[in-house]
Image (cartoon, rainbow, N blue to C red; front, side):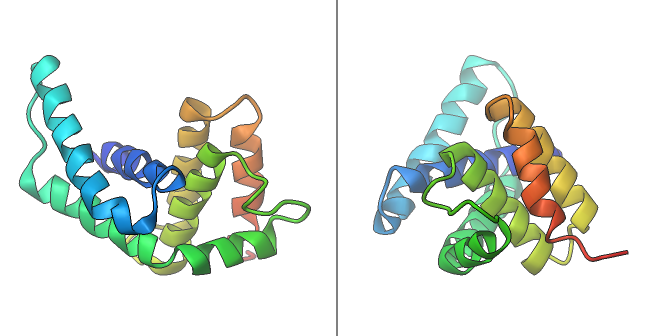
Length: 143
């Protein structure tokens, strides 16, 4: 699976946190991977490889562990907005991207921002990509 596909699956899994308690996330993770297996069977594509599932699970759980810290960082940078006021799609994308920018040394800042904007274009509202880009630009180091 490509990094972009992995990131999209992480986004889809993390989106569930908006509708479930954190304590329910292990069960939600099980449902998520069952859904991926069913989709692969229906589309007659390759099943999710064990290493891809492990990557999705590990990174998602690391992000969930840092949700409060990530939200505080987002609240600090998103002037005029709070995480409580943001759309759930935009917030989930921001959490993923901020995690990648701040905590994931394997993902360059520019890649994290570009990928977040692409997720916002695909899953967000018309203005989501601009909003996400604007917030994340504040996390980019000054050049």
